[in-house]
Length: 238
Image (cartoon, rainbow, N blue to C red; front, side, top):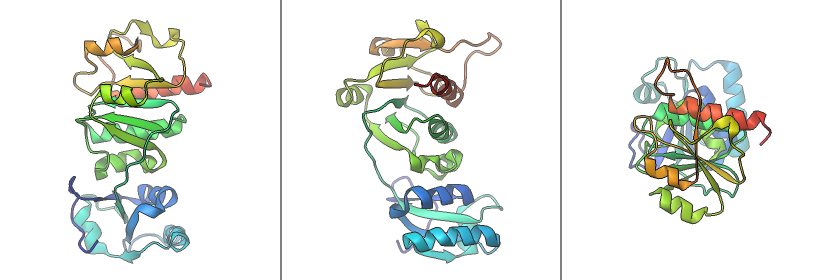
């Protein structure tokens, strides 16, 4: 990597913006790191911590205020971590499946919720927002680096690979409510995108489930819906 530019989806590299996402990158995916860039205003304690990881994992690093200013729109950004994109495969455990997610903030928040509630496998059905976009990574606070994810071109393709998973499609008019579902494992929790949700065809995938809420709102945000379901399963001990 000779030149550092603003993120381009077609590039084989991406980067973190901020201290916490970059530290999580250092902790979880040091083998993918191309370079860590720090700012001169980074406090000494944080710099000492970061240098410990850099030394441990033999990571290239430099202090470059100008480069950070070029990449970040926020004045308080003190660290950037460049890394090569990687594509891990999903395991056979429980999955979150996002069908055509469009918002990087939602996607990042969902990965953070997953980690909080012990889900570590994410399937994304294309077309979808870029999981490697710096906005996605920042919204995840680096949780992205601690989960596995896999991209699929359709639900059909996903089902062919994981045909032993029990699918639960979360929809506004689902046949069962969350509290009444007897989840069977391994399970796939399927959520639609922010604007249109899941199509009626998705009811044929398996169990359709709705999250009860008051009529004072017409729907729930995608990341909120996902968080509710993951928390429910977590406290149920599943």
